[in-house]
Image 1: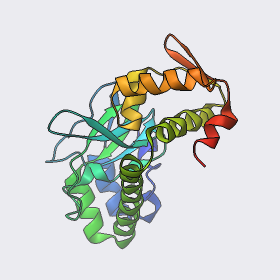
Image 2: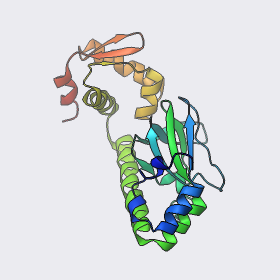
Image 3: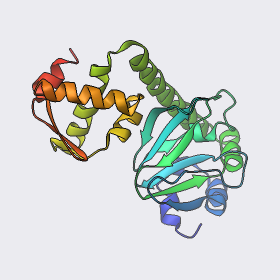
Length: 221
């Protein structure tokens, strides 16, 4: 790999032997993606283990009808185990990945990562601990879809963005919001209009301004 400093950021790097480090250095690849570009496999049957150096990746599943369900996001300095589903036999979830921003990742091909797991118990523990956390997130998402009211789901999204950015003005399209709350754009538009009528938000072209955060938080009680 050209930039060896990047692979040293891998969360399991310090647990590798010198031979294993040489293996990873020789097989890992750095790949850059533009915003909205799909992230596909490389040399093996599946993508393998990825580490996000810069940007963000959305992980989602798609129904036969084409409906997308967002499972989680992989931000900077984070890894994805579901992209290595061909390595861990217990993972049967077929996911898609797309760059949310201009994104740079380091990918360890599935064959290489499988070899690391077989030979290094620390890597195996890392992989299974990460898969447990990810599946906990997936279950939480499914619980929201099945049991939470839609106004709760949309309010939770708006508040989470506000907490992350500190900005009451959220520059996000209704289409993107629909992907995040796993619904249709029309449903999001109707609920935002209801929020606006209730004085919770102001709707402007391409952005939403939160005007009553306490009331939005009250929807989650």
